[in-house]
Amino acid sequence: MTARLLTGIGRLFSPTAARTVDHVEDAVVALDGTRIEWVGSRTDLPRELRDRETIDCEGRAVVPGFVDAHTHLVFAGDRATEFSRRLGGETYESIAAAGGGIRATVDATRAASRDELVAASSARLDRMIGAGTTTVEIKTGYGLDLATESKMVDVIEALAAATPVDVVTTVLAAHATPEGTSRDSYLELVMGEVIPMLAGRAAFCDVFCDPVGFSADECRMVLDTASAHGLGLRVHADQTGRAGGAEMAAAMGAASADHLDHATAADLEALRRAGTVAVLLPGASLTMRLPFPGGRAVWDSGVELALATDCNPGTSYLETMPFVVALGVLEMGLSPSEALWAATLGGARALQLADRGVIAPGMRADLVVLDTDHHVDLSYRPDGDHIWQVVAGGRPLRG
Ligand SMILES: [Zn+2]
Image (cartoon, rainbow, N blue to C red; front, side):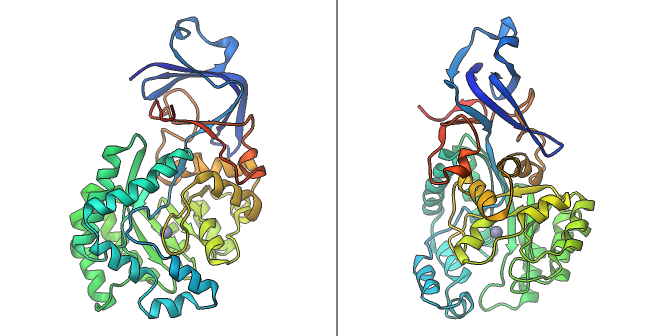
């Protein structure tokens, strides 16, 4: 790997463990291959680091690469027709009862070949990366049988092997109950076969704990099994109603509790005590035209907060983290600095990755050069393409 310098950084913004964002003006970052070697003011740059291949940022702002900690990136087909029907007044429930909803995506994903899934998903991944994402979590959960859940992991591994960004795999077999199977027999399959077979190829297990998904008791059993197989835990918690998901996530010591649209103050306090990160997903509220999750309340509760796209074909077909940051600010009451924190270090915390989300020596060289002099433009000018350069693992990805 080439040792590089990013020079001419007008303002460098780096989140801190104290949930603030530090900034350095007229900054330089030295990269030693895949890691950050030195960060500071141009005038302090050590002499021995000066003679390197240079990217001149010409006064632009630099932030850490975005960490998208919640996506369902791998799927076949789309659900634009269903979206239009909802706009026309039909409910998600009536569409789902007629074979739409998640069943439509499960059918399409089962029918698609591995190569078709790789092609569709890598196009989405490329757009994410182009918008500054340098770490992406990807869930299974559109197979709902061993063969297709396993095929989804094959696809995630193929994407990971072909991309310069870091990919984190999560098994979400307990996403829904497949057609023609009882809940109990499906959960038996998940715990008896799917998790044991796939645990060695994933970092996390996720469950859909919701009035329309699985109960807290069912989810606890699945997560116990996952834990015994060495997986970290994540929970889709209390999205459409309160099902005890946040409480259960905290009690299980989960890495994250996600959605939390119906979490109470007591739930947030339990998450804070447990050190479980809250991952909020404003794209789902936007797409479903529902109230946004309480970003301000979560931040003020002291729970560590991450923002993510929730990229999926049914309820949040979002790919770009800058847009999610803008929603965090414009619709959820976060300040621009808080939203930046949540989209970078917050995401890293949610994925329990200690080597990113901060621009400091020893961290992965994951950086975004914005085509502006301040990150506030991500929400002030929310429809702009503010990405000038993306550096992932030390590699500049744009020209
Ligand atoms: Zn999700």
